[in-house]
Length: 333
Image 1 (cartoon, rainbow, N blue to C red):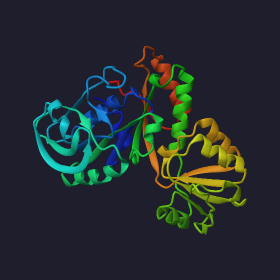
Image 2 (spheres, rainbow, N blue to C red; image 1 turned 90 degrees about the vertical axis):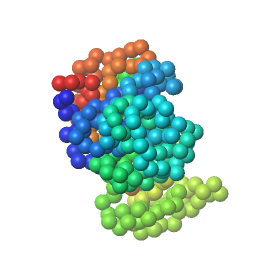
Image 3 (cartoon, helix red, strand yellow; image 1 turned 180 degrees about the vertical axis):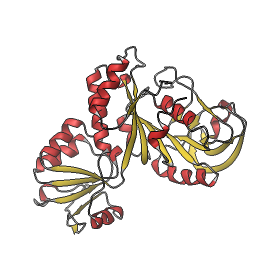
Image 4 (cartoon, helix red, strand yellow; image 1 turned 180 degrees about the horizontal axis):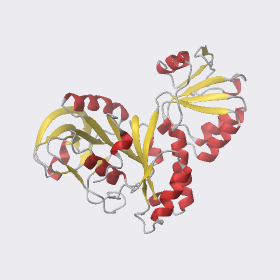
């Protein structure tokens, strides 16, 4: 198998595969990466369910997950009967799901598995530490599908972003939306060390700082939201936890003064590209507390809903619009 994805993720200890929609090719990309990393001991989990033959929501056929002897994976104990590998329980996580507690298993033989892992971002960090303690050299996470599902999905470090015809019938719209997401992932941490430190220790829902991290007064209303008309007119930095939506960003754009908006990471920005453009035209900039990077974009020209794009045209259009590598994960050569 020619290595397409492994050289792009490099030696990243954690790689998350995320999709812009269901059936964007996440599992295909994950399988490809697993095959390219066959010499490593891997730890696998999912923030949803993965590995089933048929998608439980769309009813479409899905690719299965095949792991090799020695690999580790975390899944709900109720999924054990659906895995055809010989297993040993390597540890428990204390994370409960409707399918039972999530446990860490070690594969004692090659075979197929199904994943139903933690659904909350805060549950992934302890699991990654557990994988490392058990000997996993690299952790792969099957992440969220759909933009609204990205926020809080626990994505960090390096990601493979999957996009495809299932997102939209119009190829140009798919390319534009993919470029928008890559633009969000290009957001960086602020340059000022003082501001970085202030943001890293901020636990409030909203907070206001000067350009070097000096605290500023931020009047709040009875709901805990800022009184936008009281924001200072000079350049300042607004920290906002949670999702950044269209109405929120429109409110900041109407303020009309230079403002740096900082959120947890790129997955928390749910605003559309038109609204983001309006915010930046009014002098606004976007920064993040935790930097994410897209190692590659996987292109899937086939839709689960009956239409498809020309493979070469779609891949070429993405490559012209994006500054990150674009790969067809189904290609063998």
